[in-house]
Image (cartoon, rainbow, N blue to C red; front, side):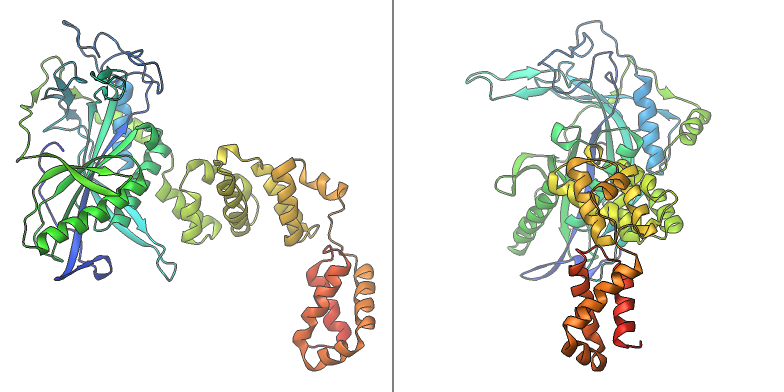
Length: 504
């Protein structure tokens, strides 16, 4: 964490988030620093490639290797990406910012310093709304989380300790890659909130195309600051859990760390401010190194780089071209399509899912489209472990299925079978319905005959049904069976009731 922020308590303590210890309730306080790798072809101050998975040290220029006399040159694309991310976080964009040297020694840092931004970052305070839920009633709670700052900095290389029994190897491919460090205020009060924050941040940068959010490739990593306190009391001493690389692990790390700290405090001990690591195998955190006050990194402005300055007009142009972000999209789907907030929230988790849904819903019933996309399509994709981009059923195909239901050509039940065929074999929905004889029978003559046959075969039940109208359902079932499920259920139901003389 760079710089120090003034701690302000913005939240009212909420008992449903407390953790009960042996001596009463405790409240967790969490703040996060997320390192997001900027989506860009070349590095922050050099022209070397940023491609993931290249041979060790294949993407290293003389600047990245810190050869004498090499000068850094700012990559304008990375600056644009940082500004766009700041705008997506509704944050203050600073028209003047300064690059500083953060000095420390480590084998994977050939310069002996990291170029970062200390006192004057490119982006200042912003906000993000997270949704926590659904609770037992199915409701979501929207919470506003403060963003402290976003700054640009270089990533370090990677030390590999498992390649050789006596030596460590260094891979400088990542050295000099642009990172955005996004720092939240300490406004999070539970592991669920922290997970929702990280999920939302990832969704926003993916919508913007400023970071791919692939945590498994290390392009998004989180440092999690955790402290505990008596509800509404003074902030406690924090421990920082470094480089947590999945949303699930963030939740586990916070749960474990909070209980560990409560245990220490309830035994009369004190929390040491320190850096810890999360062990995913054991599900616990362990001490890494003590952060007495703070390392003296001897920050000073990098003499090789001028302050970074741009005009408000530059920011305005970038702002005008921003895509619709998830919150706005969600609101629009609720208003335009009449969707439930819950359904709209699922559809906007990924831009590709929202685009797919909008293609299906165009000119069709928005709610029905949402049900099919969420329950049938996403359900099938999750089961198959596929992303929306790999969907075997296209929006046009799914749309055609919905048209066939609306026209009364097929029933909802037949539609499920048709979806199954499209999923496994593909094809044109209309042609499939014709060629496989899947049309529902709406010809009243044919249905009437089937109804008459069933009633004639079951005179006793027919008698009982007059006294007990609910038995009509049994007749409907029999008729559906005799027509192979193709009769229009509504037509059958109406006819059965008419023939049995049941008046509703």
